[in-house]
Amino acid sequence: MAEYVEAHLAPYAVHSATSAGRCYTEPVSVSRTEFQRDRDRIIHSTGFRRLEYKTQVFVNHEGDLFRTRLTHSLEVAQIARSIARNLRLNEDLVEAISLAHDLGHTPFGHAGQDALNVCMKDYGGFEHNMQSLRIVDTLEERYGAFDGLNLMFETREGILKHCSLTNAKKLGAIGQRFIDKKQASLEAQLANLADEIAYNSHDIDDGLRSGLLRLEQLKEVDFYAHHHHLVEQTFPGLSGRRVIYETLRRMMDAFILDMIATSEARIAQSKVRNLNEVRNSTALIGLSEGMHAEMLLLKRFLRENLYLHYQVNRMTSKARRVIVELFEIFMAEPSLLPPDYQTHQIVKEGEAAKVTQARKIADYIAGMTDRYAMREHRRLFAVDEI
Ligand code: MG
Image (cartoon, rainbow, N blue to C red; front, side, top):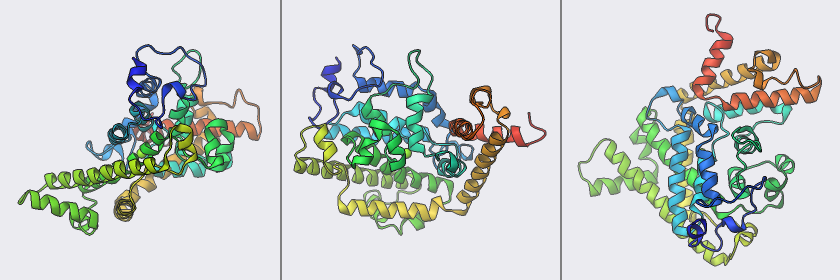
């Protein structure tokens, strides 16, 4: 069965049979490929369920219909899978990477990560990609024989999409490609770009829904205006949400079709025949120059008009304070931490003990959902809260 599922894959796709495998050897499944198993392990993990209550741009309590990290990850997986199927890449692997790519995010999105990184600067820093890998490698507690989920090398490699050289040197085999300046699999490259297509599109939708973005502003972005105009031509008199969705749909489709065609051409031109040649090649999954430029303009528009909107800034500022104050109080008084996160009784005094404790606190804070972080902050700082 498992062999049959992967029989149609292109030779340059990742195959279970030639994978670098798992850290701990496990019996082969009779019903699923190795990457189907990885996807399933991720879906059943605690970290995955936490994504439901973590911020994408809008904090979870701001509205029920905004994207969360969970719905964002599902949209990334949808885009990545449809492209993978066209390119005959390993759909299960791109799905696994897409679903796991944001596991390491703190509460309150990037604001939370930046704040935690500042708190951790003397203790090795904090970076959400590294944390995603840490979750699947060590923090998930689901198996008797090992820590983490024991995922396949190529899934872990895809999850670690960026990494500083300093961190890469500490990671062994999984960090080696950053040192050697080699590529990850095509599946990893694909999940990475699908992430950008997904958020550029859904952040426009959420931005409009929230009222922070106005349609008139968006029409100043040529790419949006072009597709908006096409919709008006096709459906004269159409108004409201349907116009926006028809426009976003066309934009997303344009990116996806361009990415399939561009990547197909690059793969053919490179003549790669297997994963090893993919690693030694240049990045083969991508957009054409013209569409890449459109993507950058959209990103810039969103940064200037949505991510740095004063109302978003207010939440960002509040989020930063919550994270910093939680970190500081736990460092000063580790006895306030739940017992699982206390190390002061087992680790000797000194700098190493402090680093261990700081990392535990970072794990605790990073694992919080938005609302849990706010509740925990109230429990610790509001005198009338228990
Ligand atoms: Mg993402």
